[in-house]
Image (cartoon, rainbow, N blue to C red; front, side, top):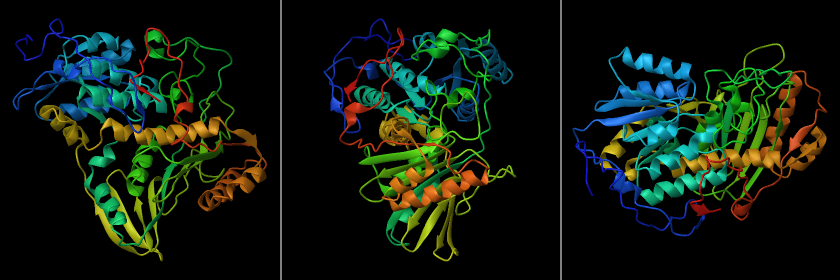
Length: 485
């Protein structure tokens, strides 16, 4: 194979091979296909700059650009965004610092350009897995923001692509790199407070109405809307705020459970040692207090069965009451995790740590300490060793999948009254208790006590794998199956 002056194997000299696709997260292997994409990856010496391309710049992408720029031996080599105004703003910020990245509006052009060694993907959710797979197939390492997928099926395809190519594929669940978090979870698992009985994730985050359009609107003139949609079905825009509010519409986003909640779900899963799809998932909730174009729930409970201890997740987008803008707290946490043990609990109140307390509420230990998730990714890229990652895409896939399954349970459920839900959920004590508090929360927001909810279907993901929701991909943005699921 011929290598260019920078050590990169020429694409023209790349020889297709074949490899058997690895099973991912308990999935069955598909037929053997594709190639040794890892052989296309540039071999990086200790002195070589790692060239990064960042895809998506209207939010998290700008933070990733700044984070990678701060690392020694890393160069921002390319930027990509389908909105030319957003792209120009990101380019101007780079050039003001003396950088000269190439710019692209089409991610395929960036991936095929031989400009970068790795990409950071911070696009809307419905693009995450597809871009991750495309990057790996082209011999590029990938950092994929959370959720690493838009549904369970495509997350498994991303994991399989990473395993098949052997390239570095990281998940943007950065809490796994912070010492305070790791120490707190280790303390809970040590038995110092007795057996872990429940891991509770909290996303009490204010979310106001996104409004309601009278009729479909045109996308911004600066946006290539066909590229923005990518694998999603062709459809008109039905939201006032084009950027960001896609989070609350099912074709593109996953609600706050699959947005902010992925971080806290990841920590819950770490705490209880759940390393596969769960045995049961059950959800209840709805979208309350807003007649808008949002589709995802702003109030939701998800119960997840696992062998060691269950997980219970709570989403609240409404304030504590109709008379305040303040959000509720639970064990002093709003966005965090409470690991309930026999003799107390561990409370994670930030991305960087938390504390332990006994049953009387007395604090008995404090945990704090940061790490650098992006530096961890670069270290793994330099070594060409995915095992160095604090959070590879398999971990990101499983945590994202728990959120997707919670939403899937809700969407496959039925409309039911509060009393009906109450009677049904009492069969699971933790869920029944949380539902009583959710009822009170809705009443405190002056919402009718008999308002209909969506009572989710009870899913058994470890046995019903083939029933997972899967989008119909739009040509030419198909995600080709890597493994059967």
